[in-house]
Length: 107
Image 1 (cartoon, rainbow, N blue to C red):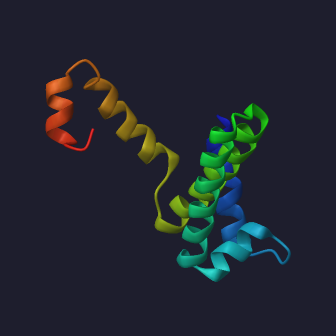
Image 2 (cartoon, rainbow, N blue to C red):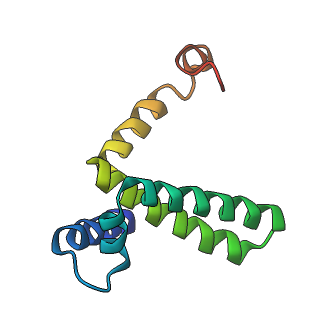
């Protein structure tokens, strides 16, 4: 099992058990607005870390962003496997630039 799936499984467990003192349970208790606020904050912090060109800070903030994104996915009923499936679809189109731009006009 990879570390993202393992983290996701812990998140689901904390969501289910609602342990007092658990930060993850706290996020689920506060709801999607709080979860999304944290995703946004962590995204901004990762951007600042990248701008500051601090490898350690980038790694730390990216890990925070991934964690909070996994919480959001769990809240919405989306699994890492769902994301993996989408990435596999995109990989199949990797060499077809014309097809890619028909799917995503913003790229």
